[in-house]
Length: 431
Image (cartoon, rainbow, N blue to C red; front, side, top):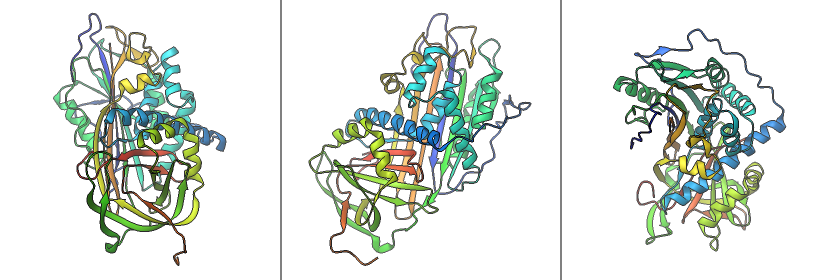
């Protein structure tokens, strides 16, 4: 990280998040740092009101999709032809936790970027998600906060800690922010991502005040795995470069998507709670234009996911993997979340520093995904840094993913996006 020295504003605050989809579930117990003091030892989480109507659930999913696709379009543009991969649920969870510390215009801008829902409503839905995941063997999450243990650097509000405990089940620890603290944070991330995100924090900046970590672990095999005869070889035609042969998964699905600009299919994971969605732009549609189309009309995508056409679909999908590491602050600012990164930032609901204004300096996001015959393994990490400164029919559908395409991993019942990405090429990691 390049340090920025700002006169009279030496304090900083760092929030971080991690998300993983992996081959085996992490333990649900939190990891208490050995050298840190538990700030919530005497705090009892209050039961959150999670009895929201179905209409509110729909608003939440639509808000999440709006945020996810808008940010995805920004990330795709910045990728410059490489594969794009985001874990929007990780990013939005982290930003929602952060927004509990915001006031005034800073809070309003964060709410707008997160799809237009107020923080209180977001809290309710994330509490509902936490409640649902308590019995979910597929998706697990863990949240924690580390605060610099140094007099006068940051005074944190009890109400902020209470909100994180009530709605996000977060632990909070006071630590010296030494090399040992860095190791403890990375150990938490490593544990709750089943080792796929080995390091989230490479160093602790002297201006950093706080790390807020969210980790998710997803473990799912295909509901209908591809047999050994389902793995074949076929050509892939990247946007740039020559066609080449690659290993592909060949099968027959029964949920078809068509939106006028692309065709696709939905393939369920075991248990039926989550699904893989593939979208192949028509031959006369540029992928750039299709990504912009998705961002402009997220409701249309949700409608396709919720109501696919029942049809026999001959499918072909390449085995692929991707690793991505992004800094998202510029993208989020361009989406309207501007004040949080400047001297106008108001994080007074979180606390205050005697050394100056607390601002976000970085939003780091790291992801990994592998798709193979058995299912999907993937991981992601996000960091937000705040500082002072049957019989075959005659005419089956056919979706052959043999050129650049978009994919999502979604919550089946709602369409809530967990991961979203593109495959641009299959010859190298990251496209």
